[in-house]
Each structure stands twice: as structure tokens, then as C-alpha cells.
Length: 509
Image (tube, rainbow, N blue to C red; front, side, top):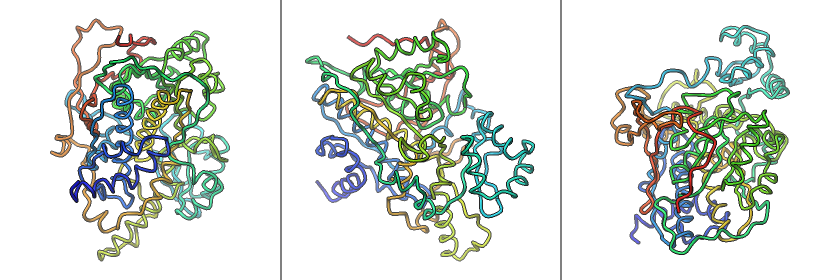
């Protein structure tokens, strides 16, 4: 091993080793994970987002490689470029359909920071029913000027509490220190980013002698009941490694086409109304032949409909039941809705980033007097990192179904991901904001860097189509992970949430 390889190995094991061995995976496998560059600063942030992106993507890919090794005995190399990984963390912004950027905005106009009597608060108003609920508390018209005026009369923490009482998304800006002193933070600060536990008995999965697989998760069936970014990214990652991922959404829930189009690529999509006996019965039928049940609804939401971890494991022994939540599966706020933009605010990241940027401006002779006390990360890093960590946890649990048997539950949360990122030593502000390249703009023609990392995929044929219709083309960011023996799939683009029947594809013989 030369000096550069040794340095890369040290970088990998620095963040990845603990997360890897905590799941009972063999430390020796880490030698197969390679970095193509020092990870930070890979983007203009004081947080180690290069390390975050590279590690979370790398662990999910390495777990897929290890799963393949358990099934076939074939080892392979895994590599992840930090800059590419950071750009993949913003992939929902970097796609085109037939050469055009999709129309629309990623955030509602009222999803913004507002000054209160004694601080700042941020609202999340992308979903109509949540937006209406916040407006009812404020008792004002749905325009920014009226909301600004109404919130100026509130105490930030009091409005956050009022919104929380109705389970509505609003977050008061906190410093890192204020976050760490909160009761919920003290409860969950030491919860690992990926938590796996055995929830049932089942025999070890038997792999036929001589079995061959072109892709690491080929033959694995995944029920993907997720929505809005982090969970769908996890399912998309499993599909990229060859799993048959059936994305199940409800026809009654709000959709986000700008996000859904990109995060559903590689999957099949169907819709079921679990308020009906037929919809619930169909889902149970799918569960009984699934290997993974993946969901990102609020804690206990599906359990109240009968689809909790223990019930699913009883119906399908040997299954992996995975959940992504905002505030975690324990602690006083565990049932609260969580969104990346709000988690950055209440979790001290927006305030910490603003402090670092202020230090940079002052250190370089600039005027920092009018800078706001908040600054967003350059991408929704909590959602993306959590999605890849979710995929990693699922594959790690699938490995245990081979080595140990059993049914397994996997829990990942935005808040635990946040504390994991914050636990890393920060990037020097001058290095972060002067020398690190910002993410490419979302504008056509794409920056040359974007072009070099993009690939073209085709619209999938829906089950109700005969295949003769013209297929749209979609330009997307390639997956940042490279595997030497089981290549990552770019997939096809479903482009609608009801393209397929609620059935499994036949398993390869």
C-alpha cells in the first residue's frame, strides 16, 4: 500500500469504520472501499458534507458488495468521489425531461424564515393542509407580507409550541448550544445514525449453490412506502443495486412531482388506498412475498393501520422492516413531523453555518454586520444522507438474514443524522467559503461538471401502455458509487406514481 492509498484508507475508516462494525459487518471488508480524493471541503459549507456524502453513499454500496459476496463468494472494489457524491446529494435539482428543466418551485413561497419578537422562525408550507393549519394559527391571509406581519407579534418558541400542538411544521432558530440543551436532544444525542435490532425469529436465508447475480440486490423485493426525499432516496438506492422496488403511494396524499420524478427512477410505482379493505388486503399480499418493508410516515402511522414492525414480521418471517423518521423512534418529540429545512433550523445547523460564514467574511475584511443569523446548507444533506444510511442499514440487515437468520428492524432519523454530521470537526471557514467550489447552478445549459456526471435514461413503459407511445428522455446525475463486479443501474424513469399493477415481478430462476 503506497502513501496515498494509506491516506485514503485512514480517511475511509475515520467515519465509516465505526458505522460499519457497529452493524456486525466484517472490518476486513473496509479495504474494498476506496476514496478518489480527500473529501473536504468538497462544497462550500463549514460542515463536512463531502465526508457525509462520501461515507453514506460508500457504506450503502459497500454493504451491497458484501451482500453479493455472502451470496456468491465474489469480492469487489467500491469507490466514491466526494465531489460527485455532494452533487448526487442535490440530484433532484439536476435533471431534465426531453432537454428541459421541469417547471415549478421546490419550496412554497411561504416556506421561509420570519423575524419574530425575539428571534427567527421558519415555516414549511409545501403541503396544502399543513399550510392551511399554520395560517389558521396566524389568522392571516396566505401572502408573505401578511405572514411576516403576523409572526412579528409572536415569540418564536411560543409559535413553535403552538404549531407543535397541532403537529404543524414550524421551527424556531436555535444555536448549536441551545439545541444541545433541549430535552429531546439530551435523550437521543447518542443514538447511532443507523439502529438495527432483531424483532423475530426466522431461519437463515439459504443461497443455492452456484447462484449468480449480475447486480448486488438482484432478486430482492422491496416494498417502498415512502414519500418526500429521504425515504425515496433510500428506495432508489436499493433499486440502483438491482432490487425490485415497488413504490406504493396513496391516491389521497399530496404529491411532489418535482421530487417524485427523480427519486422514483429505477422503481415500479403503484397506488393503494389503505382506507379501503381492498387496498389493505392487497398490501398484505405484497408483504407476504417481500424481503424489505420500507416506510417513512410518522412513527406509529402505519402501525395504527396494522402494518407495524411486529405485525409485518409475523406475517413475513425473515423480513427487514425499515423506518425513516424526523425526530427519531424515541424521545419526547419522536412523533413530530420532521423536514430537512426545519431540522437544520432547530438542530443548530443553520445557526452554526451562519456563524462560520460570518467568521469568513470578517476574516477576509468584509462587513458582516447585516448578515442574517441563519444560513442554509447548500443541499438537503440531512434527507440525502439519511436516505443512503437507510439503504445501508437495510442491506446490513439483509446480510444478517443470511448469516444469522431472523427478522430485523432498521431505524434512521434526520435528527440522528444531524448529530452525526455535527459530531465531525468542522471545516475552516476560509477554506469552506473561499476555496471550496459551490454546487453548480440549476440552469441550462448545464455546467460542464454537470454534463460529465450526467447520463440519459428512458421513460419506462407503464402497465397500461402497449409500448408504442413515444418515450420521453430524462437526463439525471449518475450514481456516485462505482462497484467493480456488480455495476450500479441507472434505471428507467417511471414519471408517474401509478404506472404499475401492485404485483411482484417473477424472481429470476
